[in-house]
Length: 318
Picture (tube, rainbow, N blue to C red):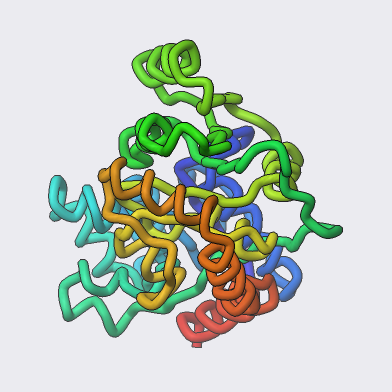
């Protein structure tokens, strides 16, 4: 089939939406389909549309349905769809969801935020990542914690830096933050933080190989977001064998499971500092996080994600 895959992320973007679209396209191409990735739909021939984001891709969905009223449609829900736009612009967001033949979500708890009538359309396909090519070699000089995410409101980007001020003086904690600042306010905040906080280092936007090198060196991957649809950095860390500490939002709990030991209350830097110090100072706790991460690893392998996409495409095209 000819598949039109719509993503709000532009061609050279390094954000998660673009990475997801490229990975999904590869899976579907391997299954024999022809996939074209665009930011918008411009009336090109298509047997199926996959739209990433109900709200951001709403115009593309409308144009596709105007040309192909009975054309199959899959909408992959982003975190902002359910956490922001379902509340701020419900008419547009719900229209896209209701028009879809299938809704793809990235974690197990996203259905909690949707109207019951839409939950029967849901298909959970967790994002995958490639394991590291060799063994990890975490730093012995520092207790490194990496934050991998752009500096924007949804990511609560300065929470790790705030927590770093609160760990005991004897801590060897060092926060390595990789990600682009989405505005000057966040860029200035990160730069200012580095002048007063020797435990915080902001590297800015870096290529994928640099992120993977950090996974090999770090003791912990920290995700501080106040909303997520199912962050790919969690998949990357688990696949790399890196223990995760995460805010206790549905987007993280739905990936790691309710029994995972590494959660802290969202937006609470004091609680985050406590769990970071516990991971550093209590080897048994870090060992338990590592054990749980390894147990989750098979769920984030490419073969599971690829089969999930093949199955949902076959279902909507019957």
